[in-house]
Structure formats: C-alpha cells, structure tokens
View 1 (cartoon, rainbow, N blue to C red):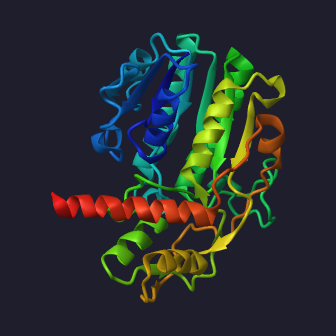
View 2 (cartoon, rainbow, N blue to C red; view 1 turned 135 degrees about the vertical axis):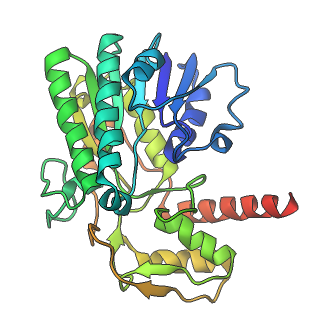
Length: 322
C-alpha cells in the first residue's frame, strides 16, 4: 500500500509515519506538511528511507492536495491546527485549516479514487455533554471554535461516505502526549510544558486548581489505532468514529506529581485561571474501538509519562552538548 500522511511532520504524524515505514504492507509513506506546527527535525531520521517521500505544502490549497494524493491508496489525515485557546484567539485560521483544508483532502481523495481515509477527530466534540465516560453516539454542544471544526469534519466524512462511497474512520483523540510534542509557544500542550518546567527547575503553571481530569493517552496508542483503521477488513468498522484513549482519568495535579517523581524534583506548581473553552472532565469509553478495530492501548499513562520525560531529558542533554 502507498499511504499519504497529512501533517506527517507534526507530533502524531511523525510518530505514525515512522511506524508505517516499518510495516511490510507499506511500499510508500508520503508526508504532506506545511511546517506551520510540524518541523523537519521530527522527520529527519526518515528522510533517507527508500520508502519515504516529503512534500512541503498546505492543505488549504486544493491543487496541493490533489497532487499529494496521486498514486496513493490510503490516507491518514493528521494535518490540523490544534489548541482550543488558539482557536478562540484566531477562529478564522482554525476554520481555514481544519474545515477547508480537510474538505480539500477529502475531495482530492474522491477525485483520485482513494479507497479509505482515516482522520484525526477530537474528544472536544463531546462539548458540554455531562455524561462520563464519553460514548461515541452521545455528544453535546461544542465549547470552542476548534471543537466546531472537528465536529464538522465528522459531518463531512459522513456525507462523503454516503454520496461518493469513500470509506472513512474517525479517531476521537483524548489528550495525546509523547515524544516530539512541542513544548514551545503559547499554545503548547500541558505535558511538554510540565516537563520543560521540571527540566529547567521552574514551576509550571496549572490552569485552575489542578482537579481537572483528562484521559491522557500515549502517542503509541494513537499510532496503533491509525494502523488498525487503515488496514481493517471488518466491514462493520468502516464509516464509524471511535474514542482513542486509555479509559482512565488522571487529574492535572496527579499528572504533575507523576512527572515530578520521575524528575526527582521538589518543585510545586503555580496556579493560574481556568482556560476558556476547556472541558473540565474527560473520560472515554473505548469498548467500541476494542470490539470493532481490535484496539488495545498497550502503554499506560504512567509508563507513557516515564518514556516521555526520558525522551525530553535526552533531547535536552543533546542540545547542551551541541
């Protein structure tokens, strides 16, 4: 199979591209990325691989998407502009990338007769629905422009599957974390920010009192879900959305304490105001993904945090040597 990974120089995409290159079923991994939030450093180790291609381009341009889809069998669509706060500050760009860009990818795939698209959906789609754990068929009202865009992606997938016969699988990610997640900038995710603070011996800021609970999910679990979705031959698994998580809730304070213990630190976090648009508690029911995809999250939150901290520590030591 020849596979296109949109956003393949980003955090989840680069981990996924690396794993796909190790798969005997794959003849080509083509990455499309505009490097707005991804980086060449993320894919530096892949460039020389004989099955790897990199295309620098923006999914907001339809012709770019059409060219990137040429000769492709399957797509895993990871390209997006993440971050709830970013979407509140700049809803127009979030809409352009996440809705117009995704529609371009879906339409280009249709024109190229590509069989299946696996796309990154989001737990933000559950919005203000109070039920826990989250079940795929029960969603509420979105709480941010980002959440709106990710729900619209699901609606387009449903309509395109019905009208054009393309197969779609949506993966609602729950707080994915791991190596290569960017700790820099105003919209960095919480775990790399905590790690960065601990490595620099600076108290990180927790938004709110630290009781917010999330179903944190190590990136290898998200990669597993993508690969299962790309290659599944279970007809019942097609044209569905799935929660991709561990099925366990961890508070922000507990998360910091796990990392603090791994770092051997005595730092205490600072507390700031809660962020607008944040969902306070999130927990996934992953039984649907288990049943239809064979998804089995192999890396726990605790083990994932250890792997993540050690990776950032090694990268930090490398930069000091340079």
